Image (cartoon, rainbow, N blue to C red; front, side, top):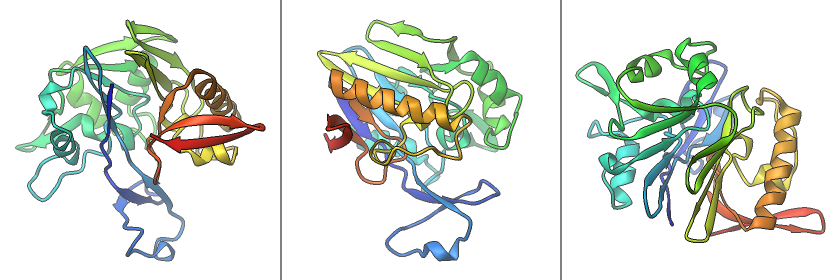
Amino acid sequence: MEIHTLGEGSYSVDATKKFIPFDPQTDDRKSRPGSLFIHVNPFLVKTAEDLILIDAGLGFKDTRDELHLHQNIRNAGFEPDDVTLVLMSHLHYDHSGGLVVERSGQLKPSFAKALHVVQQAEWDVALAGKGSSYHKEIFEALNNNAKFSFTNGSGELKAGISYEASGGHCPYHQVFLIEDAGQKVFFGGDELPEPEQLLRRFVAKYDYDGQKAAELREEYGKRAAAENWQCLFYHAKKITAGTVNLVDDHFEVNPV
């Protein structure tokens, strides 16, 4: 497998849930009181059969009016139309904004040829616009204009790609395991968003069920160590892809 991190940079997020670019080298955290600071990293995975986008970033554009996501895919040596599968852990805006692109005042699917994979109940919540974390206009633009495979619970999408309903970060969150040519790649979305959440073992207040999410991270970390998974960390600052070791009941994460 080929794995490419499609990094979209760092952002601050305040109570209004607006994502404002933040450069850790030049910007002062104190100038943005009450903000969370996050990093956004969609992933592109090339298997023998598919080119897979895993979560879709914010959908921000560059100075040429092109999606950062599209340009990052080109920088990896592919075209956006080469993407065959879009795997979505959930549909909060920082993960789903790149599913659409604005052209001539209208939102269009960013990956019109790809099959989009999302939990049915998560889609229903997002399309209804239930909560400020979902931008309803994205899903209205995709509805009837993009190809979907709606999942329910846990199962196998196709040989080598399985999904598990997890429900820690939000009620209908899902995680993915991709196996190809002896490699195993795990994407935990916002239930394993960065290595630090394995290393420090804390309950996050921003999760729907913080205790469940913490327990899932522990489970994923142990499985990753036992089964030699490569874990992809969507909100990581430094190590976006890494392997996990369990040493004396403590996790270690090593970049790959």
